[in-house]
Image (cartoon, rainbow, N blue to C red; front, side, top):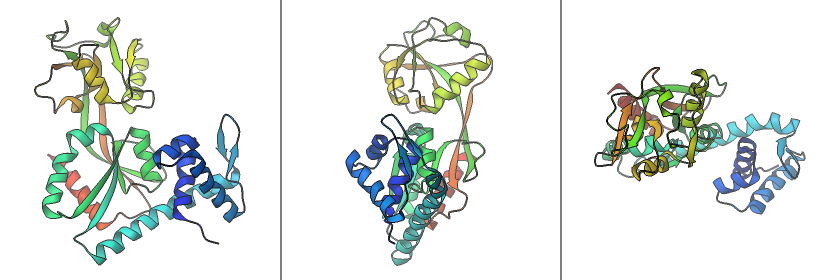
Length: 296
């Protein structure tokens, strides 16, 4: 019995994302191509891994039992290959990590520069996406570690804090609120607010807090990524509640950060790694550089 690693990766992604199309997009495959990989895996194992209907897919009992084993196999193979490659030629190699976009654009470049000074031939592959995407990449073994918010209690994943980021109101410098010392959430009722997509970790955090504070706000404009949120604010289309980290590299921008009054909205960003799978030495050293950022 021979099971290909590509088949395991396809199975894990479909199970994690709950969609053949989304998994195919992540793997840069056509949906029929992905389906063939799953079918080949099922034929090799002699079992059905998914219940398929026209509207949804779900794991069979065997599929649920097989999922953690597939994750572990992918992660172990990735770690083994990384270690062998490093032993064969330490000057060359590649680190695979997943991260939320704001960290990629605002913090990661400085760490990459510092790492490149010591290991100029080491490549770094960054899978950027929202919080859930980062967690799924680490869980599936497609990334050696991730950078995102705390995934909470998890049997498979460990979290190490790096930094704490607070939320502010981002407005155009000509906006009436641009000169305010602080703005309360209640004062934003009726404001033309921009928000990230429904899968955004920022949006989930904001809506949870708004519910706790019994504040109802209307989202006039919805885009997928925080960079697009900032772009709309800079164009004067609306204002947005965003992490301050997303504004830190915009010194000449028309966007002004206004502190929020009342309960402070915070998010902790940190390292997410698999508890039972060792990272390659190259990735472990990169994480040491990241931890230095948290101490600064």
